[in-house]
Length: 82
Image 1 (cartoon, one colour):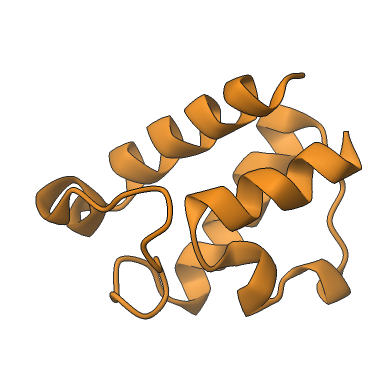
Image 2: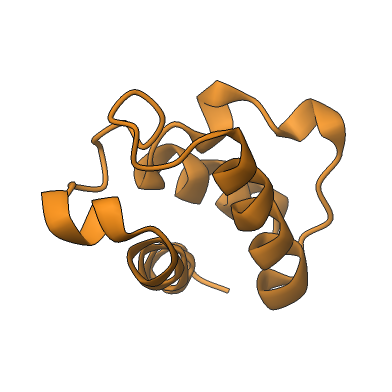
């Protein structure tokens, strides 16, 4: 899967699942965590989506703020895993 495909799927899920992202119109580089768009439970929802829809198995060590802070960081992280 290409980087653009991963980014598109993540953005679609995040904007559908987390209304604060839709309302604030966050960019791919805006922090999802610092903005309050998602919380720790939201990270778990996002991790489940990644495993089920993108087929990437994530371990506890992968669920870091560096990997899940924003759509760009998550895309880079997942591009390296696929």
